[in-house]
Length: 298
Image (cartoon, rainbow, N blue to C red; front, side):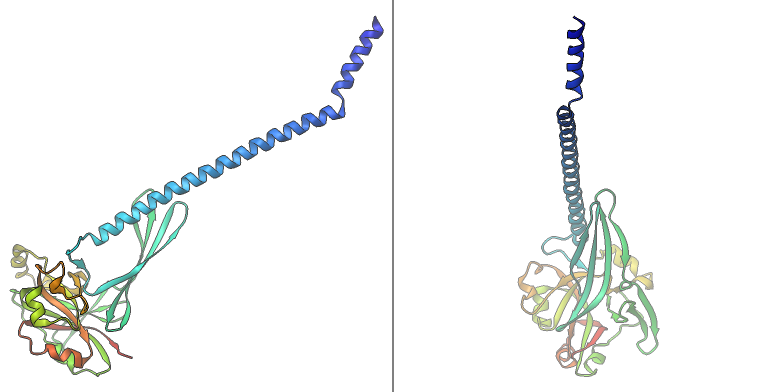
């Protein structure tokens, strides 16, 4: 009886200490560990993917909203910045935000040059931030005794900034610089801002001003009450072209046939060589003319 009991105990001990059984248990544990690890990795990857897609969606919504706010116009609505365009924005994305770098430029004839730059950060959560801005829109004001007026310069490229003069407002001095422009070197491309004596419809303006060498049309957004108040302050009588609203135009698309045909135009930007600008000299609609940026033709 005792021998049977001892034999049974030895049999149980032999079973638990069997190397094959231990290897099976160990193998099962490793499989379980591997399964848990795989599930954890897949879960983490799925969370990262979902988080990435979610943040990219929020970032893109921020970019779209900001672009809409910047343009803030529909068909036929004026845009801020006389003759200023942008070359598009380059975006660099990371998990939680994107950085957009925009270059603004001006074009005279077939030449273009950088006018300003701007870098914005678009976080998935939080407000859009301007993290860097070029000095293009920072003015350098200089009183020019010969020109008899304060001339503004773009700090980024040291080019002149154009000015517009409002109709029906009294000024102590009205610059007439178109004649100076037509006397410059023939290999120079010149930007000139024209301010009209009275606002004109695009159809009437097209007949008088024409379309060749006309780049931009100024729309005076000031109301009558604002214009009357401006009479009392000399500092706001002259409009910096960078803050003006209007439309880019070209010879290929006559503005009198476009969506802006019912809009009143108070000024324009013309550009070209002195010879090309000569035809504008005798127009009696021009109240003032101001030279802006200049650049060599070649």
